[in-house]
Image (cartoon, rainbow, N blue to C red; front, side):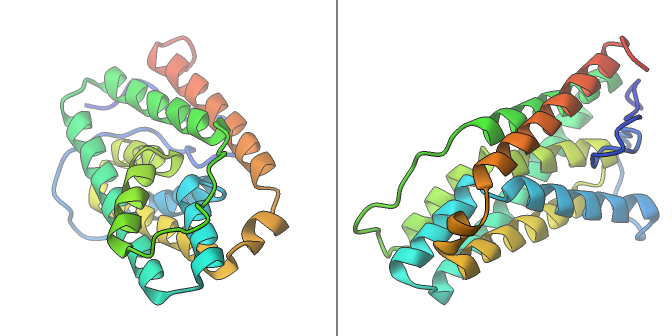
Length: 220
């Protein structure tokens, strides 16, 4: 079934295509599949700018140095959490009606907006752990509840091609943590991360409200 609403008049957002929910196996690479990959990649990267996982990697790099092991752990956790988010989104979508699936997308957008607006006051301890296993667990926990993964789950519902939505999320999220690893402490010094996060939160909140109203049939 197809959700009852479409994403129109969203020229400044990623959600500028109808919300289709068609279960099926992954076939040849069509335009819709590539759109799922590209949108998830861009959305997850933008939503991860200044996010908790990127800041953690940047701060650990500043405190401990740019260790290759930390980058591998960050990329691995980004891939695992993005693919998991896409898979969970597709599982939920298959149990929902069309309007319920659209409401799920609206909820994911609102949760992403809330996460972007929430201030990050965490600081790296004076003697941060060098355990890569501990870093992996902390990164996975932060990433599974961040805006980027909420958007990946929404993409899996919108385009119904969760493997490519997950791949796009892994690439975008991986690019964000790599940026943090390369920048170190300069990331927070050079970019107005808080203002960027607030601006993104406002955009996502607006998209979530529009999508929710569409699901309720209040707007077309």
